[in-house]
Length: 87
Image (tube, rainbow, N blue to C red; front, top):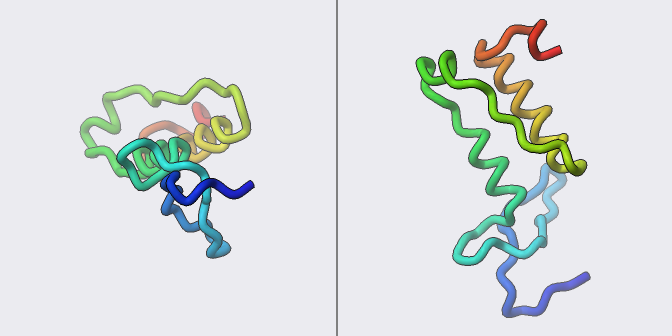
């Protein structure tokens, strides 16, 4: 489904080189989903990573589940949580 020319589109490029094409958030360059991915992809400071609990989104749809899996994977790689806890 094509959006009208007046509706700004998400600027995110997928791995295969195809643009997201979802409507961008008002005043932003990314859609809601890719803004959330961008927010969680920023590394936390090592001190806050050890003291702040991992905040997972509600697992209400496929996108939320994908984001949660990415957050758990990133937390393992950053030594924020143990492999056992992640499991």
